Length: 369
Image (cartoon, rainbow, N blue to C red; front, side):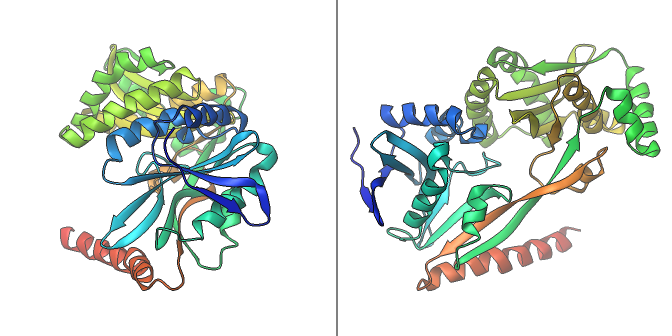
């Protein structure tokens, strides 16, 4: 077993912090997979999701997985890494840019205690000046706990819009949306059907994903122009991690085909009877048919048929998501900084992230425009 650090918790010797600096530990893997099921964790917090990402993307950072242990073993897990950014040591959540909803994973009976224990450890600033937690949803216990921190800075990263899919059938849904939207959808669908046979197919297993992976890459290239080594790497660990989520029945994908040729795809996760959209890409050659809306409505029809109660349209605060059908904003994601009060460098870093970077982006946008 790898060398680990132990920290006794204040006023409670039965719950200790144990740090793992590698995924190469059978006890960690076994406990993590067990907690996935018992804690109802979102699939992007699964061991099978994060480990493939880390082994390909975490080379330049130091893994710092925080766990809480008692006599029963590991009862909570919070995956972090330590990064060095221009002399600032940052304790940051993982996976970065591969996870839309971060949370701690814990045994339900001890969740509140474990959340406090992990955050107490973060507040020690033992080997870091600053803590950054990415994609924390406003409905979670973790968010509520962080609201109590006096030195926390909250930055909204995205509002989340949901499509209600509790309808008898697709006709009832269409009758519930504005007439202009309904007619526009029917018109575009009719025109698209004139090109040939269209069909919505599902991706429900790793084998399904493997079958369509090449087609999805081709659609991606047509949409964005190139397939760089970086993007090729993304597809590599996506195949492994998303494939495992599919086989655990925690993910679902859709492929829209024209005469059996894929022209758009939508990938997502299944969590608490909600489809959480993750990636939506379409062939721009068919832009005039609004393929994004077409595949979205077809996936809504699927959700209604199979009793999926809502579609979370995913992170990314884009105006078009708010315009889709009966969408409503229900909650938000935040990036949350916790700084060591005596650390000037962490204060400067936060200033750059909150003030300077948005200003530079705004100026760059004006120049390009």
